[in-house]
Length: 156
Image 1 (cartoon, rainbow, N blue to C red):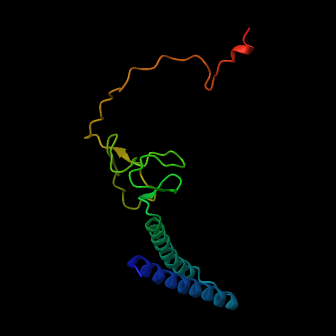
Image 2: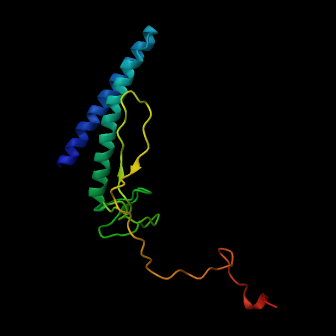
């Protein structure tokens, strides 16, 4: 059994135990008509952490079985090594892989006691990349989008 399969079995066992404990605690609290939401929320949070890790392990196992290079961030379908576009949704699979297109975004500091998260700001020290067109601008087309001329047999 591979290390991935071993970890998956451990997580499945832990997930079942946490579910059992959460259900038992909820039942006991209902029987006593006294609910401690902080306890239930804490138990549910532990369950969610294990569930998220289990989902990631299962995704990795699925990729390993399929011999795929990864899954599309847009639609989740698997793609082969060397693929540039997703076969299902057409998304560029290389987008967002460490390529910076514009100026860097810096998270500002949050004042103590503030409950509101500030908006990110553009770093003024970064120069904007110069726009360099790759081809001359296209001639404007006055026809509506999707326009197709009528077949010759219908034209007068």
